[in-house]
Length: 142
Image 1 (cartoon, helix red, strand yellow):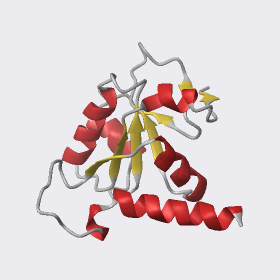
Image 2 (cartoon, helix red, strand yellow):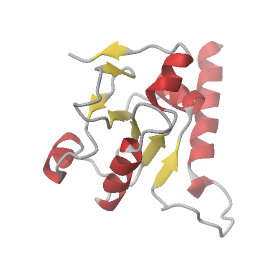
Image 3 (cartoon, one colour):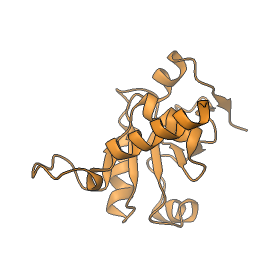
């Protein structure tokens, strides 16, 4: 029964995050490929979607190696060559985060990914700080 509800919540989260599934209001406030995702939505997607790519946009100077599970480090100032090597599929579902809502690195990386042609990019603005405050699992990068 728990799995059924997890799937329902994940489907609702995807619906809420995908404007193409909703009626078009005519008011676009952000580029069509850049979306925000929040803590509960991210957790639900992680619990139900194995194809999700999670990126930590922090640079080495501020990276304490604490990560949302399965997240990969891709600093916002990485070269386009490094980005393309880590993310060969332009249609992959990608979530980018950094330290907290005041950290601009995730926004910078999201903007770069969209400009490079990635089509399913989400920004998790609350970042690692809120993830930890919610007592969700974290891992240490090697």
